[in-house]
Image (cartoon, rainbow, N blue to C red):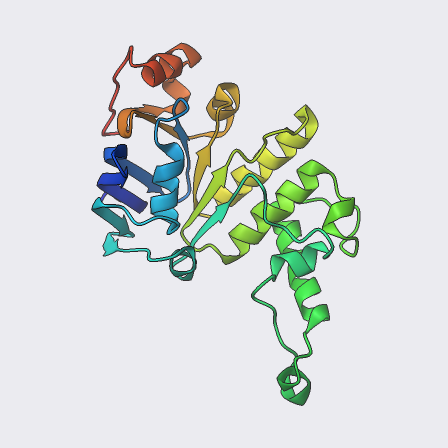
Length: 256
């Protein structure tokens, strides 16, 4: 295992009937970095992320988490090992406030008899949520309003913050700024940078190449179910990324 590697995949294969979605795909995400996963439609990005986050079981290959071989039977199993995913549909509860969303499915009971009776420690969860949002730079008009009352960027920031709150190793972010305006997009990207600075590996799946170049530290390119190129973002150009996605360029930078 390379120093600082949080998650690695070697030779992943995934078949759906006669269709081979992954054909020996490799991947690497390091602690404290944003690695962008890019590729044209049908390149295998979604399938790879599903395999790496427990939503799908690969038919072949190997996944290592912090150097140890793992098999994620379910997304819940991946979450137990510190791997979280933020999907495009966010999966937030619109009628609940931000704090309740952060602890959704992981609520803290009150101490003593009240907790045994099912009462929740709402004030404790709210205090932790406020501190967590502050640390990530997430600004909300109120901690007490339902998610439905927030802007798209604010809802996305809450979804990202929830994943980060429970992730200890890796966070997958699937198109986190899709359908957002310029100002809201930059606020979400700033949250992404803060997550990286906390030492977590962030895997960004995006079709927005300027955004990828602006926020990623490294870029891995999939084409036809396999990794065809790796770049250090600071040294990459938009033209190189497009060429790699279309097959006009192969650039596997193992030392990146």
